[in-house]
Length: 197
Image (cartoon, rainbow, N blue to C red; front, side):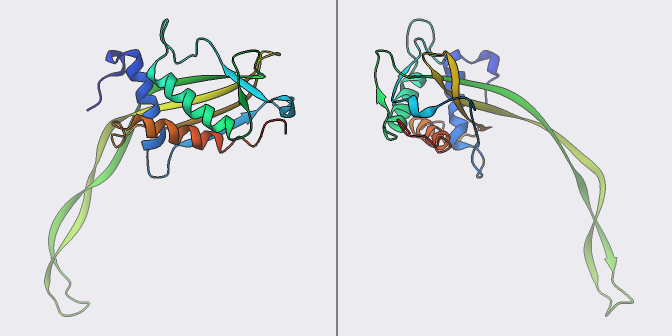
């Protein structure tokens, strides 16, 4: 059973947010992306990271940050971008959050009865089902979102943003690395640009 979010350590909350992105329902996370319509992506050839990143805590880089940097660097370099710490064209930032969401469902309660089918064909005794008062159930799911921002370092303006969101499940809690890789890969599948193009 999940602990209440208010009792979880900040790092644990961020890690949990990532877990959902690769381990949610069979349909996978919901991926969204948007670009600034005034941005000329042909101008970008290099990238770096915000310091500190939104997923960092205090004066140190979280494990989540380290994994996200590795995954995004792989994706951007595969598109021809060059990593640099000196005046990059694009700055990358990450956001991760979770929230509890309440769901209510109702279903009729089945009630058995014993009856006869006389008149239609040879009568025989059998069981049937009628439905009575609906059974109402309330349950909670933890939903999370990971967002990746690409910011124009000169203009200080958001150029592109991609996100993945879904319901946290238990299947991949012990495999955070794969969860991060899968989420970042799916987000960047919506990024249509390559360096200088």
